[in-house]
Image (tube, rainbow, N blue to C red; front, side):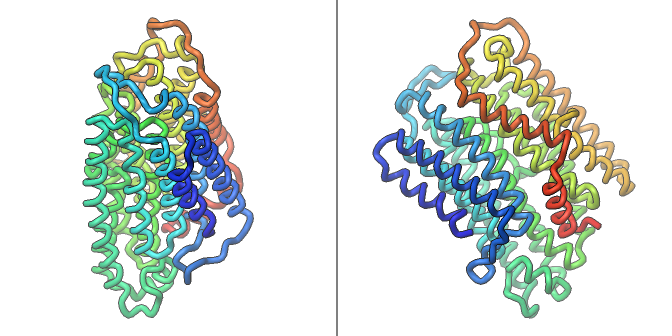
Length: 484
């Protein structure tokens, strides 16, 4: 367990000491492979708690840790080729035609590995105070990655990311203090998740409600729930595509995990209806806001960012509806991570050839980039929940939970938002894929197409077959979150 987050931190420090870019890239791949190996081993080996229970790997943490490790492996493969393409630290601004320096590659790879270590620590943290520290550390380690291009737009995005998420995390800290007050006199080790669940009947209800509200707002800011999402479109749009893939596919899940930890305590304390009402409201609002901004969006990376806001809302809505909706929300988290990372990596391929992020500047992608263009169209079907891809059964499960629970209005609003988003995204994706090609077919190196291709195949497989071990894990987690 200590190696899971210790090796990435060691690798991040080592990246600053190595003298050549090639050795740093080898280090990045080695750490990604080792982390994935340790994560897969954790499914077979029961890890004992460490540091007096502060660190432990339960089923919920293992699920999100696996997603982080898989996405980082794909991102590391892509990043090696991406960094080689950057022409020794000089890159052209695609819209303004000026040159500017990149961050040194040592900073980029070092911060990538620190980012992996902090996200891993989030999944292992069982004490709410340590969880807060780990989530804040993900912000600090990923901010330099957003500023990689050293442009005024990336600087603005990084600053907005730090400022808004820091305000949110401050509210989450206050919520953690309220948890301390709620747990006074319970006889347990204060703020350790399982202890609080065991002593939930003795927690002070009003303080626990206030704590959940503050933690939902605080971690919801990092998760990208509307109206707390305003940092997300800028950060995802201005960061390198490989970083955007990790921000959307892995980082947002870390904040979601923080919310689910306090949901576990509230469910055990008998506050299920209070929790579900708030999550349902934030979920529907996030989907509605995303629909408004996706329709007619002129920047395809910002469109993908608003799609992340939509899917965070779907996940919150699923947990809020309870029952089968919780299972659907967790399956949605798995499929969204794979599909959105695939789309951002594919967007990076398109950006590298067309030199623009505007939708109007990209035409004929299927002819210029046959593989990436096909992945782009397939990604559209994946992310909008079309069969036979994995997001269809997860979104259908959430719809079924709404109907089974007698929430007809919620189901109608849910379907309306999905329909508007489908229409808006269809216009963007298909215009970019079709049309007259502005240039001959461009070569597509293996490192640029293999990672998104493998991620896309994962979403397809999960739409046709969910492995028994994953089904059992999702059912186990669902029961801890209030599902019968």
